[in-house]
Image 1 (cartoon, each protein chain N blue to C red):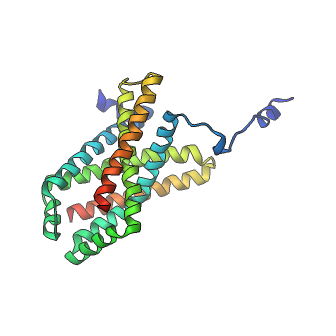
Image 2 (cartoon, each protein chain N blue to C red):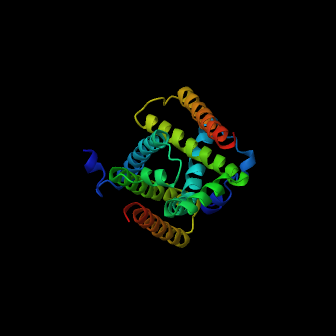
Length: 130
Length: 114
Protein backbone atom coordinates (compact mmCIF):
# COMPACT_ATOMS: atom_id res chain seq x y z
CA UNK A 1 0.00 0.00 0.00
CA UNK A 2 1.50 3.36 -0.94
CA UNK A 3 1.70 6.30 1.41
CA UNK A 4 -1.16 8.28 -0.11
CA UNK A 5 -3.60 5.42 0.19
CA UNK A 6 -2.54 4.81 3.78
CA UNK A 7 -3.33 8.42 4.58
CA UNK A 8 -6.71 8.09 2.90
CA UNK A 9 -7.57 4.98 4.90
CA UNK A 10 -6.97 6.55 8.28
CA UNK A 11 -9.99 6.10 10.51
CA UNK A 12 -12.13 9.17 11.00
CA UNK A 13 -14.66 9.74 13.72
CA UNK A 14 -16.95 12.62 12.88
CA UNK A 15 -19.90 11.40 14.91
CA UNK A 16 -19.95 13.93 17.74
CA UNK A 17 -22.38 11.76 19.73
CA UNK A 18 -19.86 8.94 20.09
CA UNK A 19 -17.05 11.19 21.38
CA UNK A 20 -16.66 10.97 25.15
CA UNK A 21 -16.06 14.41 26.59
CA UNK A 22 -14.21 14.54 29.93
CA UNK A 23 -15.11 17.49 32.18
CA UNK A 24 -11.96 19.43 31.19
CA UNK A 25 -12.82 19.07 27.51
CA UNK A 26 -16.40 20.09 28.20
CA UNK A 27 -15.32 23.29 29.99
CA UNK A 28 -12.88 23.98 27.15
CA UNK A 29 -15.34 23.59 24.28
CA UNK A 30 -17.97 25.55 26.21
CA UNK A 31 -15.41 28.34 26.69
CA UNK A 32 -15.09 28.50 22.91
CA UNK A 33 -18.83 28.19 22.24
CA UNK A 34 -19.75 30.88 24.79
CA UNK A 35 -17.03 33.13 23.35
CA UNK A 36 -18.63 32.81 19.92
CA UNK A 37 -22.09 33.52 21.35
CA UNK A 38 -20.82 36.64 23.15
CA UNK A 39 -19.14 37.82 19.94
CA UNK A 40 -22.39 37.38 17.97
CA UNK A 41 -24.36 39.44 20.48
CA UNK A 42 -22.03 42.50 20.32
CA UNK A 43 -24.07 44.53 17.77
CA UNK A 44 -27.24 43.99 19.83
CA UNK A 45 -25.48 45.28 22.95
CA UNK A 46 -24.30 48.40 21.12
CA UNK A 47 -27.75 48.96 19.63
CA UNK A 48 -29.50 48.62 23.00
CA UNK A 49 -26.93 50.91 24.64
CA UNK A 50 -27.39 53.56 21.94
CA UNK A 51 -31.20 53.39 22.19
CA UNK A 52 -31.23 53.43 25.99
CA UNK A 53 -29.05 56.56 26.10
CA UNK A 54 -30.86 58.41 23.28
CA UNK A 55 -34.11 59.44 25.04
CA UNK A 56 -36.28 58.62 28.08
CA UNK A 57 -38.99 56.98 25.95
CA UNK A 58 -36.41 54.86 24.11
CA UNK A 59 -35.00 53.77 27.46
CA UNK A 60 -38.53 52.67 28.44
CA UNK A 61 -38.82 50.67 25.20
CA UNK A 62 -35.48 48.99 25.82
CA UNK A 63 -36.53 48.07 29.37
CA UNK A 64 -39.90 46.77 28.14
CA UNK A 65 -38.12 44.73 25.46
CA UNK A 66 -35.73 43.23 28.02
CA UNK A 67 -38.67 42.33 30.26
CA UNK A 68 -40.56 40.25 27.69
CA UNK A 69 -40.60 36.55 28.70
CA UNK A 70 -38.79 35.22 25.64
CA UNK A 71 -36.01 37.82 25.92
CA UNK A 72 -35.66 36.94 29.60
CA UNK A 73 -34.88 33.37 28.53
CA UNK A 74 -32.32 34.69 26.04
CA UNK A 75 -30.81 36.86 28.78
CA UNK A 76 -30.49 33.81 31.02
CA UNK A 77 -28.61 32.02 28.25
CA UNK A 78 -26.36 35.02 27.67
CA UNK A 79 -25.76 35.45 31.39
CA UNK A 80 -24.61 31.83 31.53
CA UNK A 81 -22.42 32.38 28.44
CA UNK A 82 -20.80 35.38 30.11
CA UNK A 83 -20.26 33.70 33.49
CA UNK A 84 -18.94 30.48 32.02
CA UNK A 85 -16.53 32.37 29.76
CA UNK A 86 -15.51 34.57 32.70
CA UNK A 87 -14.79 31.73 35.14
CA UNK A 88 -13.24 29.42 32.54
CA UNK A 89 -11.04 32.35 31.48
CA UNK A 90 -9.86 32.90 35.04
CA UNK A 91 -9.11 29.16 35.22
CA UNK A 92 -7.01 29.57 32.07
CA UNK A 93 -5.08 32.46 33.63
CA UNK A 94 -4.48 30.39 36.77
CA UNK A 95 -3.14 27.48 34.74
CA UNK A 96 -0.96 29.85 32.71
CA UNK A 97 0.89 30.70 35.93
CA UNK A 98 1.03 26.97 36.77
CA UNK A 99 -1.69 26.80 39.37
CA UNK A 100 -3.89 23.70 39.43
CA UNK A 101 -2.26 22.02 36.46
CA UNK A 102 -2.19 18.37 37.56
CA UNK A 103 -4.98 16.23 36.08
CA UNK A 104 -6.88 15.78 39.33
CA UNK A 105 -6.67 19.47 40.22
CA UNK A 106 -7.63 20.47 36.68
CA UNK A 107 -10.70 18.22 36.90
CA UNK A 108 -11.59 19.79 40.21
CA UNK A 109 -11.28 23.36 38.90
CA UNK A 110 -13.34 22.37 35.84
CA UNK A 111 -16.16 21.31 38.13
CA UNK A 112 -15.77 24.54 40.13
CA UNK A 113 -16.03 26.56 36.87
CA UNK A 114 -19.21 24.69 35.84
CA UNK A 115 -20.81 25.13 39.25
CA UNK A 116 -19.87 28.83 39.58
CA UNK A 117 -21.19 29.57 36.09
CA UNK A 118 -24.49 27.83 36.74
CA UNK A 119 -24.83 29.34 40.23
CA UNK A 120 -24.22 32.90 38.99
CA UNK A 121 -26.77 32.28 36.23
CA UNK A 122 -29.25 31.08 38.86
CA UNK A 123 -28.78 34.29 40.85
CA UNK A 124 -29.35 36.41 37.71
CA UNK A 125 -32.38 34.28 36.77
CA UNK A 126 -33.96 34.81 40.17
CA UNK A 127 -33.40 38.55 39.83
CA UNK A 128 -34.94 38.42 36.33
CA UNK A 129 -38.09 36.47 37.16
CA UNK A 130 -38.86 37.25 40.79
CA UNK B 1 10.18 42.68 29.18
CA UNK B 2 6.43 42.31 28.96
CA UNK B 3 6.32 45.12 26.38
CA UNK B 4 9.00 43.45 24.27
CA UNK B 5 6.97 40.23 24.16
CA UNK B 6 4.11 42.22 22.65
CA UNK B 7 6.15 43.36 19.63
CA UNK B 8 6.11 41.86 16.15
CA UNK B 9 9.37 40.05 16.89
CA UNK B 10 7.41 37.44 18.84
CA UNK B 11 4.16 36.96 16.86
CA UNK B 12 3.05 33.79 18.68
CA UNK B 13 3.82 35.15 22.14
CA UNK B 14 2.24 38.46 21.11
CA UNK B 15 -1.07 36.77 20.28
CA UNK B 16 -1.00 34.49 23.33
CA UNK B 17 -0.11 37.26 25.78
CA UNK B 18 -2.51 39.80 24.24
CA UNK B 19 -5.37 37.35 24.63
CA UNK B 20 -4.55 36.92 28.33
CA UNK B 21 -3.93 40.60 29.10
CA UNK B 22 -7.12 41.73 27.33
CA UNK B 23 -9.05 38.98 29.11
CA UNK B 24 -7.71 40.12 32.46
CA UNK B 25 -8.50 43.77 31.68
CA UNK B 26 -12.07 42.87 30.69
CA UNK B 27 -12.54 40.74 33.80
CA UNK B 28 -11.47 43.66 36.02
CA UNK B 29 -13.73 46.08 34.13
CA UNK B 30 -16.67 43.66 34.39
CA UNK B 31 -16.38 43.37 38.16
CA UNK B 32 -16.01 47.15 38.40
CA UNK B 33 -19.04 47.70 36.14
CA UNK B 34 -21.30 45.41 38.18
CA UNK B 35 -20.10 47.01 41.44
CA UNK B 36 -20.67 50.51 40.04
CA UNK B 37 -24.11 49.54 38.74
CA UNK B 38 -25.23 48.37 42.18
CA UNK B 39 -23.53 51.34 43.86
CA UNK B 40 -25.27 53.96 41.73
CA UNK B 41 -28.40 51.84 41.09
CA UNK B 42 -29.63 53.88 38.09
CA UNK B 43 -33.44 53.87 38.17
CA UNK B 44 -34.46 56.40 35.52
CA UNK B 45 -33.16 58.08 32.39
CA UNK B 46 -31.24 60.84 34.21
CA UNK B 47 -29.42 58.41 36.50
CA UNK B 48 -28.70 56.10 33.54
CA UNK B 49 -27.09 59.05 31.74
CA UNK B 50 -25.21 59.90 34.92
CA UNK B 51 -23.87 56.34 34.99
CA UNK B 52 -22.04 57.06 31.72
CA UNK B 53 -21.30 60.72 32.50
CA UNK B 54 -17.83 60.66 34.17
CA UNK B 55 -14.93 60.95 31.74
CA UNK B 56 -12.86 58.29 33.49
CA UNK B 57 -15.73 55.80 33.17
CA UNK B 58 -16.15 56.57 29.46
CA UNK B 59 -12.42 56.08 28.98
CA UNK B 60 -12.46 52.81 30.97
CA UNK B 61 -15.40 51.59 28.91
CA UNK B 62 -13.67 52.52 25.68
CA UNK B 63 -10.52 50.70 26.80
CA UNK B 64 -12.74 47.74 27.67
CA UNK B 65 -14.16 47.76 24.15
CA UNK B 66 -10.68 48.02 22.66
CA UNK B 67 -9.58 44.98 24.72
CA UNK B 68 -12.77 43.22 23.64
CA UNK B 69 -11.98 43.88 19.97
CA UNK B 70 -8.48 42.41 20.28
CA UNK B 71 -9.73 39.48 22.35
CA UNK B 72 -12.53 38.69 19.88
CA UNK B 73 -10.12 38.98 16.94
CA UNK B 74 -7.73 36.44 18.48
CA UNK B 75 -10.51 34.10 19.61
CA UNK B 76 -12.67 34.05 16.48
CA UNK B 77 -9.52 33.88 14.34
CA UNK B 78 -8.60 30.64 16.13
CA UNK B 79 -12.12 29.32 15.54
CA UNK B 80 -11.82 30.08 11.80
CA UNK B 81 -8.34 28.51 11.70
CA UNK B 82 -9.72 25.33 13.26
CA UNK B 83 -12.98 24.89 11.38
CA UNK B 84 -12.54 26.59 7.98
CA UNK B 85 -10.00 24.52 5.99
CA UNK B 86 -10.62 26.40 2.71
CA UNK B 87 -7.90 29.08 2.44
CA UNK B 88 -9.89 31.48 0.28
CA UNK B 89 -13.02 31.32 2.39
CA UNK B 90 -11.02 31.69 5.60
CA UNK B 91 -9.21 34.75 4.25
CA UNK B 92 -12.56 36.35 3.36
CA UNK B 93 -14.01 35.54 6.79
CA UNK B 94 -10.96 36.97 8.57
CA UNK B 95 -11.18 40.20 6.55
CA UNK B 96 -14.88 40.41 7.36
CA UNK B 97 -14.13 39.85 11.04
CA UNK B 98 -11.56 42.67 11.10
CA UNK B 99 -13.96 45.03 9.34
CA UNK B 100 -16.77 44.15 11.74
CA UNK B 101 -14.61 44.67 14.83
CA UNK B 102 -13.40 48.06 13.55
CA UNK B 103 -17.01 49.05 12.89
CA UNK B 104 -18.03 48.04 16.42
CA UNK B 105 -15.08 49.95 17.89
CA UNK B 106 -16.03 53.05 15.89
CA UNK B 107 -19.63 52.65 17.04
CA UNK B 108 -18.61 52.28 20.68
CA UNK B 109 -16.29 55.30 20.38
CA UNK B 110 -19.14 57.35 18.92
CA UNK B 111 -21.46 56.35 21.78
CA UNK B 112 -18.90 57.07 24.49
CA UNK B 113 -17.19 60.18 23.14
CA UNK B 114 -19.85 61.98 21.13
